[in-house]
Amino acid sequence: MAVDSIKFGKNVKSLREYLGLSQKSFGELLSISTRSIAYIEAGKSSLKRDMMNKFLEFFYIYNASDLGESIVIIPKDLKDKLIAYHKPKNEHFIRLLLLQPKIPHAIRYKLLPSTFFDKPRETNQIRIFFEQHGWVYDGDTLSKALCRSKTLLKITPHSRKSNTNLYSRLQQ
Image 1 (cartoon, rainbow, N blue to C red):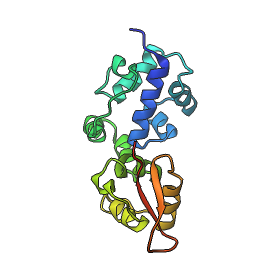
Image 2 (cartoon, rainbow, N blue to C red):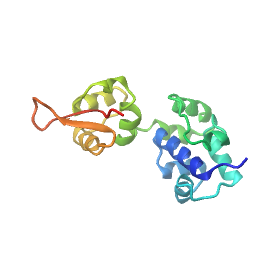
Image 3 (cartoon, rainbow, N blue to C red):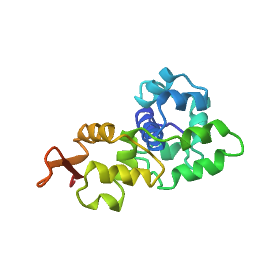
Image 4 (cartoon, one colour):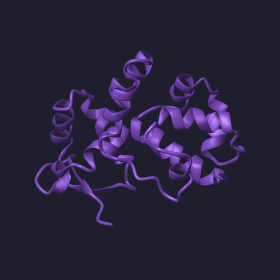
């Protein structure tokens, strides 16, 4: 079966980012160089069967046609399913998945989809939200990351507190 390498690469990148894995750590898990991961994700590499099989084995719930579609559907419990699947054979993968994610990943994949973010929130409230998930972020660092997320968030000055912003989901 012929698979569109551009669509395949975009879907692999979406899945990797959803899991919070860097290209480097993802490459380590699959025994593929970071450069190869970058080329595949950009659709600049022709997919050989053995390379494709590494991805399909890793994302065991998908097949080649799933990853060759326009947009892969990512189940909310993907991380849990992959942990259960890989746990008996790949402890390194489990450790990587359980690490605290980088702030942009936490914003995109935990904060934005949550009902917590249905109304505008201050940085301190968002920090507490992440702490409830076991992730501790410095308030200043979190605030800077929130401000850099202008394509995802609406940022407005607080009406009663100076030097305080309110963050909410952009309406799309």
